[in-house]
Every structure is written in structure tokens, then in C-alpha cells.
Length: 84
Image (cartoon, rainbow, N blue to C red):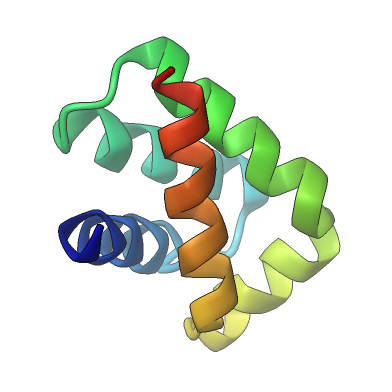
């Protein structure tokens, strides 16, 4: 679980380096797939994160480049659910 949180944190932080939401999704997907996620799992995970937090909060996290621990945990949990 700890390894998954580290991967999730890296995905979110790498995706947060750009200000455009579409670029955020693209970076998230690239990072997710590079970490071994299938396209389905990565899309599913992103959709769950977007539905839970909404674009405005995600854009805020992008600007601060500091997603809260709860977002990292939620993303890891979402990815696990999508892998089932």
C-alpha cells in the first residue's frame, strides 16, 4: 500500500506541473501508464478523482503543486478499485 501511495504521489505531482486541465489529464495518464497501469485502469482512476474532487479543486491543487494527503490516498484507493 505504501508503494502505491508513493506512485500515486509521483503521478499527481508530475501532473500538477502544468496549469491546463487537459494537460493535467494527459500528464496523469502518461504517468499512470508508465507506472504499469492499463489505459482502462488509468482512465477509470482519473474519472473517479475528477468526480470526487471536481475540476476547480484539481486546478487549485495544480497551482499550489501540493495535493493533500487525502487526495493521494483517494487516488490510490480509486486505482485499486479500478484494478478489480
